[in-house]
Image (cartoon, rainbow over all chains, first blue to last red; front, side, top):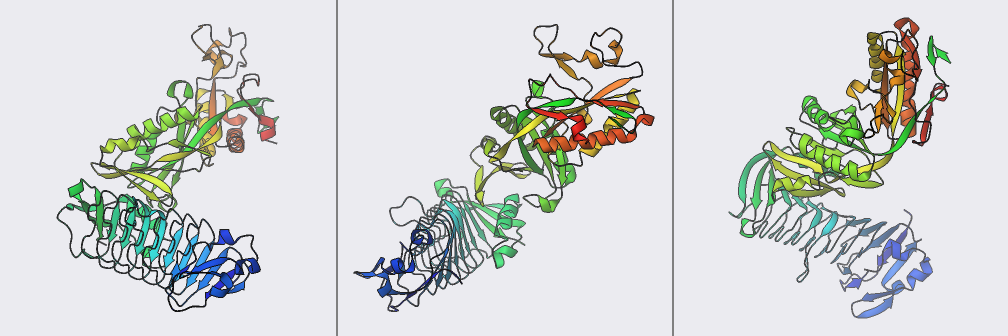
Length: 270
Length: 299
């Protein structure tokens, strides 16, 4: 495989800020120059060569190999190219991403996709809490792009989310889509309490009956919605169960009516 | 030049720059998709009185439409982006929003966009919702049979309007049969529409009129009932009727190919079927930038 490979030397879990290591920011640098870039590891600012082993030549793809959960901000603000993480991606993976592809062959930590506006994150393992969510004090969570989680996700998926899609093949925790403004969250597994709390707009697509649905979501009966065909067609290129989805009939709840919300919870009926 | 005994005059069709869009209208089945498309492209024969020229370009099978339902591709042509946007919005509101089960999508990527659903959404009275799929915004407007899906905008491209063929025949029936054959052949091609009824216009016009208020008036040079008195009459005694086919296309090449298909279909009927000659309409070459020489097209 062509491109640059960085292998994290330290496996202890000390945070390593890699938010400045994106394909476009490394463009034009040779391997020697990259090895001399400075990287924060914990409270120390070190040359990259002391934190990572460096292989290959810089290109459109950057591979980061790690056994530590310490990576921080991988893919921050990236606009193009591919970053492939082998192992756990740590916190804030894909934060403020604008384009390109972030592949995580492992778990992602908390706050993945925070402030994301474009591009695609594929997480082969599980995602932590606050996936695509706003941090405290931020007006919006995710504002575009697509995140696919092949495993499970933690609590507060898509909190204050405004645009884009979060697709979870497994289960999600509590407070999914809390205070959501718009966008799409698809979950094929189970969901916890607080689903759609204070949600104003947007779509939650479920395959499993929600464990606890607020009475402030009003049942609008079984529907056939053409928009689902458009969404499903966009998911065809994804590998896995979302690609195979052919949603026709859904049960539709609208809420959260406590905030005059018209967000929709759709339960697949086929 | 003669093809199969049909005289091809050494002249050209003069055509103009226009702004165009393609939309795809889908429905629960072909019938209902066509009801919506027919209404959408209705009363769109000439920009002079209709503001837009439009027609059905082709039928689309379900696997070629954005939502996987049977669809119809329609082309609309206007003289400006402003007119095009206004006509698209009006026609979506009156002809597609109203048609049971319909949805409408952009069918062309243009250098610019004209509004399509951005105003119609307000029909939803606050219950409308938007959904961005693959970077494209769609509006979902609740209606009595479910939801009307309408893409927010549609692509606009520079296009060509006013390509034409004028042909003479011994009788009205023979002119009609030749016209029908030509339009059928031209409809096989993508990227063009023939905006007049059945693709054919009988009221060809000349520039100007004796009435000051009129910009155009009947082309007396081709009116068989005036051949004895019109000072410019082009008609020989055996001409019984003259018809014209106007063709608008997305590019000059689309128009040229359609004109060739039309000429071939008319000429194939030949002099034995009463077709006498084929000519084209122009204004001396000063008004339109595109000149389609009939003999070059057939070379």
